Image 1 (cartoon, rainbow over the protein chains, first blue to last red):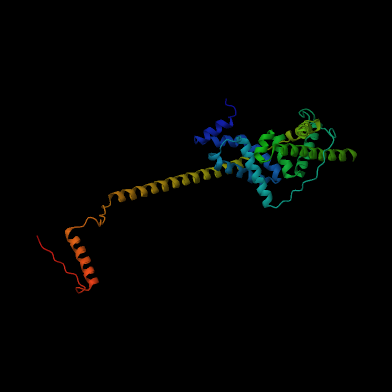
Image 2 (cartoon, each protein chain N blue to C red):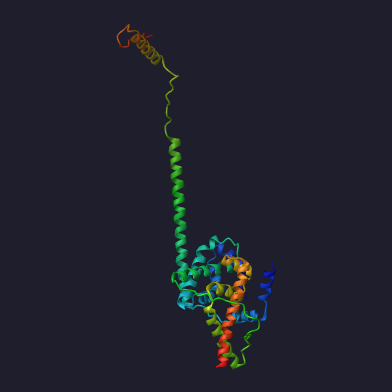
Length: 195
Length: 123
């Protein structure tokens, strides 16, 4: 049984013109890239279209990939640039809410192990839905950093490379994004509890 | 430095970690098989285009090299030109030049009419 193939190995196989290599790259990244793009552009059809474009561009440019960043960082960079281009083209106004740092511990709801508890399943699904909606409310800059860090598990340096911004900016955007998301979810919950 | 440290610490608070867990737990649905087959088709087309471009590039390189080779070959094979060397004059030429200058000198003195006479003794 074969496990997942490392990016380095895939790149080496691609450079040797192995026809299967790019399929493996697709297998490894299509769900993640699509998830990222879907949350960035908010329209499923557009997201599918952009995700295809990401991989076509990657396929075109991979022979010139210099390996200065990881394959993952490089792919998400392409995805991010395409999302930004699409947003700018469609002239969608992204409203960045002014943020103030919230106090710690305002609202903490951790997703539970929902396998045996139907109530918890509903609660988690609701929380997911609220979080998705709150994510849509974040500005593109904050959302990008939040998704890359908290969802894709990229470190600050990788994100800084992908977005071409300083590490300090990455950290501050992450902090603000989480704060805003927490506030949005907290507001929703308070509203629900108070009627 | 202190700000940086504060920010690092702020990112590690429980509320920030809780938000991270929410974001981590969001489900992701992959694109459909149809989407994947469309993408594979696009990639195959791109692959073909790349091959055509490669062959076209290779073909034009070969054509350029062939043209350069032909040019060089023709250049080397062309008949050698004979260069005029004024110093290497033959006896007749030397005599004509001398006669010309004599005529010019005589003309200047107005001693003879302005035509050149050449006396050449066949050996």
